[in-house]
Length: 99
Image (tube, rainbow, N blue to C red; front, side):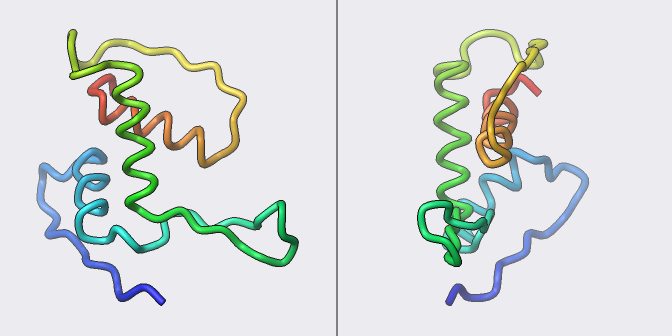
């Protein structure tokens, strides 16, 4: 059973990117998503903050390796994906500096 989550000190400059990084470091084993396991009825699967953060960083690296280029570039998405994958892609765009 995971311990209680560590909460960040909130101030004016705590953005989504900061939340992803904070939770990867301080709440790595805490659940980020819990959903029904389609391969095992009645069971659930959990994605932790660490797993989600790593996925966001992988997306960021695929879209913008080493953050080359200009921050804040306009990006359009047309996705047919489940909620978890969609959120990982959007978080990856934020990590990459596009959002």
